[in-house]
Image 1: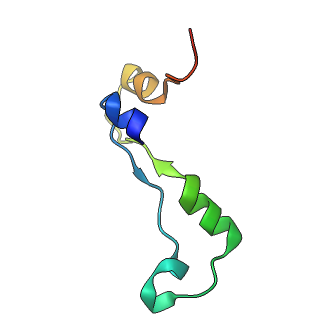
Image 2: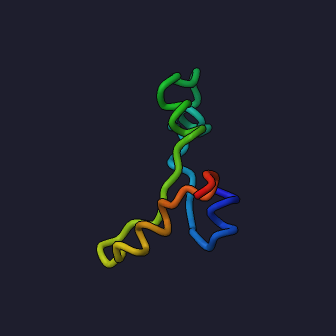
Length: 64
């Protein structure tokens, strides 16, 4: 998320698990806990252009 932010791309955590909320506290479910740890939301809306999608999805970690 920090690398995306540095490139001017907004992102958000994927979701928090219900089991992590005080009113539903229970042992974490492994699949949902893993998704919550690694998932993220990228910008998505119907007016994104192909070039915006390419910029958002570009892998800046790899060398050209």
